[in-house]
Image (cartoon, rainbow, N blue to C red; front, side, top):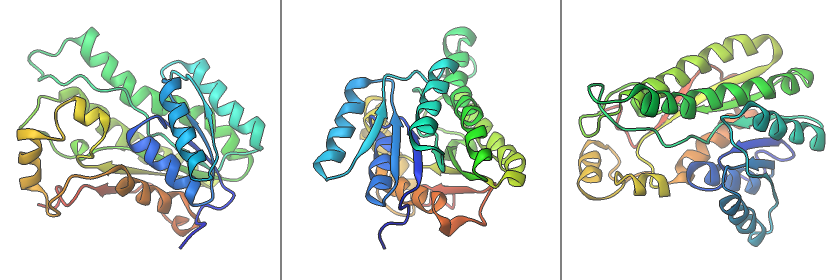
Length: 257
């Protein structure tokens, strides 16, 4: 099946690497007009060039700091003004959370930046895109929870990360309720351990930590960005027009075990 997103205007944040990059490329392959952003101009340009090498086009706005309301508004308004409307918003970007247990986590230097980097930037993008979706009678918003929104970790202290992703999950359900009368759907994807540059730098996608994660998985491999991108295609497409307020674990079965 091809062209599942043909002609749809899809905004994807964090296209420079990892899950955001995987979704932007997969959406473009499925016919969407992709408008992306990233805080790194270099990484965003690399994704644009990768798309071009496949004969695809991704329109990227960069650098964009999604924790700054003016940057977010400029990104969203660029898409609305250039393409006339917005059909899809994928909030794939996130700032790497501070990993520490409750006993040692610093409020100002660790807790608050994690909340801003995982929760606030989702709120800001949804708020900015809202009037554009209302104007055309609806759209699909895809946010990212995590398996850690439902369960803690025995491997790493992550009190802030668990709280942030649980907040995104709860916020998305409320967005679905408030968006219903306007035809705006909102769902979440909850990834398990996905192999990206970020998880590699954190040391969680290889070595002893990865081995412990693999032991808990039903499907014995770590995820890759395209595993998540295919779920996003479904939630962005007309195949899911009766789906809202739902959470989709894409985690190799870790939450089932």
